[in-house]
Amino acid sequence: MHSLSPDYLARLRFDTRQLATLRALGEYRGKQRLYVAQSAEVLSDLRQVAVVESTESSNRLEGVVVAAARLKSLVLKNAAPKSRSEQEVAGYRDALGLIHESGDQMPFSEGTVLQLHGILYRYMPQPGGHWKATNNDIIERHPNGSSRIRFRPVAAHLTPMAMTDLVARYRTALDQHLADPLVLVPLAILDFLCIHPFPDGNGRMARLLTLQLLYHFDYTVGRFISLERIFEESKESYYETLEASSQGWHEAAHDIAPWLDYFWGALLRAYKEFEERVGTLSRGRGAKGDRVRAEILKRNLPFSISEIEAACPGVSRDMVRLVLRAMKQEGLIAPTGKGRGARWVGLRNDTLPQGQPGTVDTEEQKGGSQ
Image 1: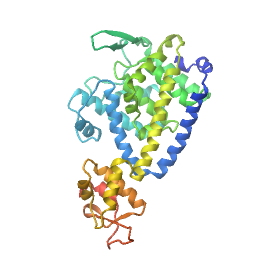
Image 2: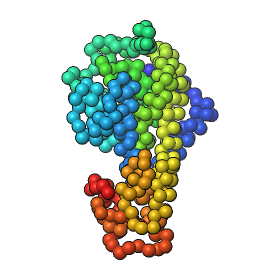
Image 3: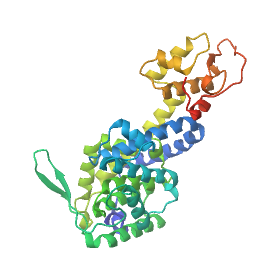
């Protein structure tokens, strides 16, 4: 649509700060590949946390709230949805799972967009996967009961044509290298939101499509750090920059800079957090991690995970396992067995009781507790 026309793209200009941000994001993408290759165990823990946070935050941005205990059970598919809110959460979970699984191979097309919306609403009474049949202004409602129209999207009868045009212009811009993908992706998302093609779920769809399009260019930080959480934590700026950049959109006279700056800033924050958390988890560092390490280092006799957990109240079993794994890689400790009966011993005196070495991963896979 309007943000992706050759004429509009040709008029874009970026200052030195913006160009530096684009370069930094490219460098983080390179580091990301290195982390993925070297820190597979740590990243599996980040992935699970990110899925829960993404599902919660993206729905909460739309006013859909589910109790924390139920949320995790729903995301892990340990429970069936019981209410409308839980149905919406379960739908987002499924759509997000599909993108994480094969988003890099899914084309950006009308069919894909409709498919994702259908998944988003698969547990709802009303079916998804259909363009809107009536106009849907974006309205801001205030606590005092007043409201205002933030934006008037494309009319319902023009929506199918607008979506066809959006997909075609995006593909043309990519094929002809009219702009960097990190420019084209947020522009496509803005145009999608300005079209507002569905009767409901447009915000959640925009965030799902953001992940999918970034995956196409190997910007996969959203797999490990929840971009949806970052959007929620800065939701005032999220909505304000979208509104600012949509003014004049119908006439192709809009200023894309506020939205681009916000989008790149959120992505950069995700990469910085990713780098910090991979480093922290792989070393078992941080306040809680250091408590666990100190407790382990003062042990002279073989110990179990449950003993360390009991000695460090407020520290999760996952954190204990991360520290054990890190200290094992550092050669400070070793397991003395496998499975539920496994214990650990320090190697500071180069002594290891006889027994078949095991790993903390084996215990995790068995779901055992000590």
